[in-house]
Length: 225
Image (cartoon, rainbow, N blue to C red; front, side):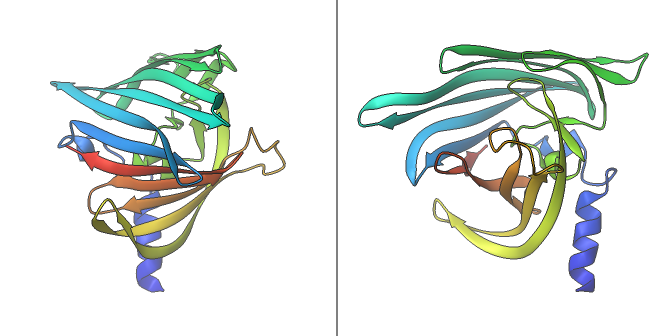
């Protein structure tokens, strides 16, 4: 019990395991997206570096079909820019069922705040927020996240569930299983956070994410370089 408590404290401490430096060996992270066990798309992250600057570009695309007709589809891209461990900017464009969504975020050094202009929210935000993408384990270390699609700010609670083993694509991972939920679970289901997340401390990678919303969804780590 004491060992598990130490693991939780280390993982959730804001100053430990929180550095972009943990991803310096990665050039690409590939995740596949499944709905009800069927492969429907992908979510890829690409890393480029120049001195203290790191840029992570994100590509996502998936579509849900019913009786041969497409009933839900998303296609988008985004770019996170860091200087050392500080997020400097984030920009994204997403087409969701022909509806355009976007985020333009910049770090205001004078105010020490993020300034966001998004399709769902425009205004300031604390720099304690992170962009809610699945490449970074920081999503398990914060009390709130910024939607990478619309810019909305979502308060969250992260709970450790158990240490587990999972098999994906012929690999076995020893992972920490977490539950990530909205702080206010009375929000409408399409607005609230309710995810199961499996994290591999050895590689600092999120291995799998699952949630239920118009079906059972999974993001699975397929490959990283």
